[in-house]
Amino acid sequence: MHCGFCLPSCPTYLLWGEEMDSPRGRIHLIKQGLEGEPLSETMVGHFDRCLGCMACVTACPSGVRYDTLIERTRQQVERRHVRSPRERALRAAIFALFPYPRRLRLLRGPLWAYQASGLRNLVDRTGLLRRLAPTLATLESLAPRLTRAPRPPRRVPAYGPRRAAVGMLTGCVQSAFFPGVNSATARVLAAEGCEVVINPERQGCCGALSLHNGREEEARRFARDLIDAFAAERLDYFVVNAAGCGSALKEYGDLLADDPAYAERAAAFAARVRDLSELLVELGPVATRHPLPVSVAYHDACHLGHAQGIRSQPRELLRAIPELELREIADPELCCGSAGVWNVLNPEPAARLGERKARDVLATGASLLVTANPGCLMQIAAALPRAADASGPRSTSPRGDRGMALAHTAQVLDASIRRLPVTRLLD
Ligand code: SF4
Ligand code: SF4
Image 1 (cartoon, rainbow, N blue to C red):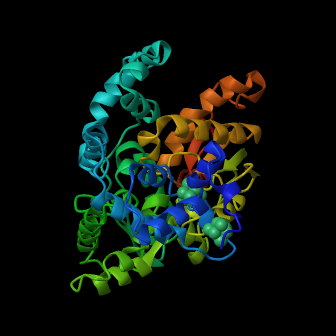
Image 2: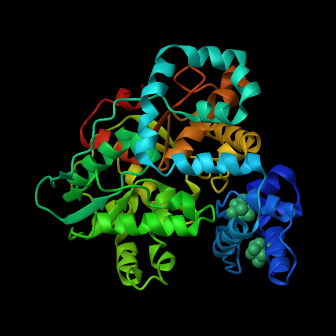
Image 3: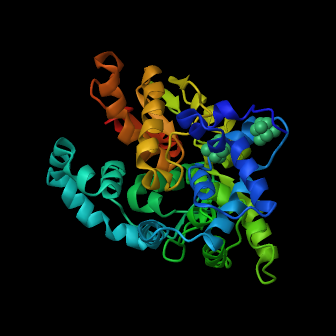
């Protein structure tokens, strides 16, 4: 089918207007590869430029499974294509760091010292780092302002009668840079009658980053380790609060289908996986929601909306909070440009997508941006001041500065359930 319905929702087609940077063009290249065309540098470039946002899967009226096609193509690229030494070094560094929460946590000390010293402002003003080391400058611009990171407990008991036993993924970037999101997730689940099993010392990466970048053997290794980490627990559900991780965990059955020792366990594990918002709606609320007088713009993370089809649940949860006003962002299907490590590998186009999203967020006039993925939180937080500067003073946030408050859905629910002042979310 060649209808092209997917083209307007493809961020790379919007950026460059090139057929080969659209889903339809990439499918054509995949077909050429299957017909024997050798994998050229140009073809790999078009595949690499795909964000894997899956907006095209949502848009396609014919049910074309581009997600499966690009995942298998990326595996072929990693097996057969020899990248330049610079590319190899960059990817090796990324995959030696990001899927390892302990290594990421080691960065907290130096990063905190850097932020506290005021060096960050100097680096921002001079633009020196961007000229000398663009990749490092991108990572630096994305790094969130650090907060305290207490070690999560092994278990959190249910508040009141126990309704379910729930395992919880702490994640790599989430546990290192957004520990408050994990604490809020555990508190909300406990308030809703769930016993939360965290086992922080046993769990590592879920394999999402590897899976989405064609490194399926590495992804299988991470998946087996995570299944083993919770093997001794009797869990009704396994909850995830990061969109990219959730969509990978739901694929464990397929990922380990050919492994006789794990196939059955992986399928059973995947069947219990729920996004936090999905589970809370499935269980129904028991904890009282207290008023939060705030206007919220909700951003659909691609791996939640497009990959998992979860759009109504977070909105339903937010609307149920008294005095909270939910506002919609224009073009909600468009990716913010984060896409795992796509923004690190492709900083310039990622910044353009980030600014487009940030402009749409500012146009809602909301005080708080809410989303359910650490990558989106970092990407949009970095883009908001640039978008506000470019659009002039009228578009600054209601806080009156160049930024805007951001939070995960779990933090908003937690604030409402604990009757916290709304300023705790906006400061
Ligand atoms: S996954 Fe996203 S970037 Fe890739 S082809 Fe589809 S819409 Fe375009
Ligand atoms: S992928 Fe779907 S929407 Fe896109 S051109 Fe093919 S049939 Fe049409």
